[in-house]
Image (tube, rainbow, N blue to C red; front, side):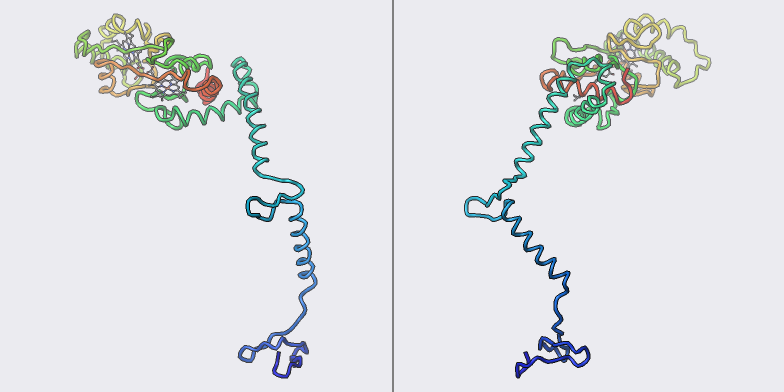
Length: 292
Ligand code: HEC
Ligand code: HEC
């Protein structure tokens, strides 16, 4: 207020001033806009209604709960409960369904794929790679080249019982060490390596006489890899005609395989993972591309 407490009227706008004066700049005392004032009242009203119905005021030990008794914790608990129920239900369906049925049922497939993906990241990616693409000695699970079979059942069996594992039903396989155990000479192994490179299309057959290699193969290798070298899933013996190599495709790697042998091992997951998770994993791998 000015010194004599009389309202001061601004001479340009004709509006009363508040009497505040900053270096000659004065503040007009205009009323608040209507819309603003009404929004303000509505907010106050809203706050009061909120206090009454919703949890709001902290007390010493507790808080005011409001007439609606709303609680996010209760909502989450409720949602979790129905999710768990739905999962248990889907899990039961997953175990009870024939493989073809699972693939046809979109809901079931989505459930299994999601559960399988998580379980894969947690348990399998360390060996098979995060995208299941494999690494040397650890098979790629996305392609359609299978050591032990690519049907849903075959994949599930591999996962459940493992390979060279301690489970009594485990798959067992071993590529003998032909060089180390002196079953074949270095020259014979080299002959076979060249033969395999020609068979798998890595090397053209120039003037090579393949007859000695064919005989060596028939005598030493065909019992496991098959007469045509296309592999044998009963024994986990890989196809040697294709371009996919578990332990490396160059001369040196193949020589090493035949010379010193190989013995891939995978733990059995039966007992470590529950049956629903194992089925989900099988579905996940089966749907990623290589399923048969
Ligand atoms: C300790 C490493 C390791 C872990 C962990 C592992 N695997 Fe394997 N897995 C292997 C190896 C090695 C082989 C190949 C064995 C062989 O040479 O016959 C294999 C083979 C497989 C096969 C058979 C592939 C075929 O071509 O027939 C499947 C299916 C498979 N694994 C799935 C899984 C799943 C699912 C998990 C996770 C629950 C998993 N593996 C975890 C090492 C592992
Ligand atoms: C007793 C069965 C058996 C016999 C006999 C056998 N193999 Fe194997 N071979 C296997 C198995 C099983 C594997 C896969 C090993 C693994 O996955 O750990 C394998 C793997 C291989 C591989 C690696 C393939 C890849 O994808 O990297 C080559 C190469 C190979 N064998 C060549 C031969 C040759 C050549 C002979 C004959 C001199 C032979 N094998 C005899 C069982 C056999």
